[in-house]
Amino acid sequence: MKTKDVSFIDLQSELKELSYKFPKFKEEDLFVLWFLLAYITDDEQMAADSITNGPNDKGMDAIFIDDPARIVCLVQGKYRREIGKKNEARGDIIGFAQMAHTVGDSKKRISGIIYKELIL
Image (tube, rainbow, N blue to C red):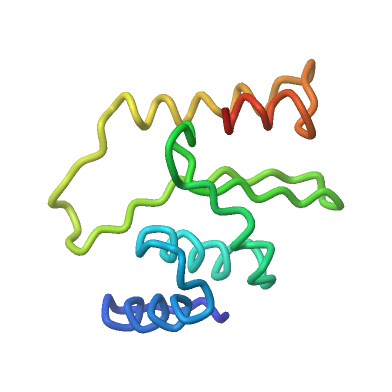
């Protein structure tokens, strides 16, 4: 998927196209999937498998792990129909930012302890 300047109508069109491939995803999950495909990976299935949105997700909507590159992308998406109509709660932003400390803790390994902390 090419990155480009998109209007809201263009975005809705792309989300609708993704919904045919991933019918179980809610609109906000499709938005995060679109973001992953636009900025993180070209692999639709890897991007879809990264979606974590749901109860007990610690405020993260996706965790993309690229083992060969040794990169972990934590994604929190907010799909809004209008810009500037709703601010995010300060606690939500701080909580999400603190996840960097959990992931960056060199005493833990992403394959086990941290992943359990992020998801559980």
